Length: 258
Ligand code: DGL
Image (cartoon, rainbow, N blue to C red):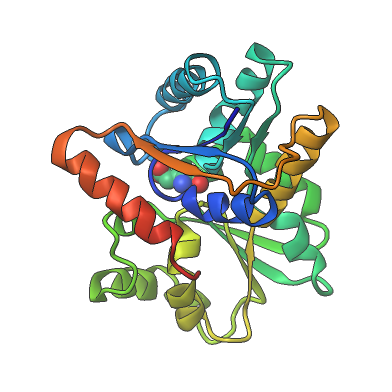
């Protein structure tokens, strides 16, 4: 049985790479809801409904043995509901890696880049409150940033200009760390680092999320113990040629060094 990985689009492929690295014998289905992306500027109800529909398709219709919600936005909107609906299936979400970022040095200034919804939601407010005595946490909504990645535009002048303007007041080492609180952002990590400067530490929740999924599957004896090479199947909600183009982009991003 495969492990399902879900995102609003191609961003969760950054987490899929972490998953495949530590579970190379597993089969994965990666589902991107690019037809409805972006999620980060939608209402809570819309994101909940879409996430629940796709989870049902992956867990019930396609019999996945576990689900990684590889989207910070969908996690904050729906992961609690999904766990209530499917209490026996390992379901792991992703949240901005605030904890390692505030703990990496004494009272750091930490910039958290995420979608407007992730930053607005209760889950993030709780996370911020929990660690606010250990560092200065600065939430930065980045509406539109995921669209560049969704188009495969990782290095162009447009995305560079977007980041330069968005991050202007934090350049010249104004912050100690940056948290990539949306799974699309690791694909523009190099540019973000370039704009903020080499001394800024970058944190990404993907590797921790992948480890958590492995732990949860092991607990239930669901890990594939064979030594066969695992497979990855890309699925997407778009139709026609847009679908074909998106699957091509998925494969390119999956094979990309980030
Ligand atoms: N990749 C998603 C996340 O981690 C969100 C992108 C979006 O659909 O706005 O938050």
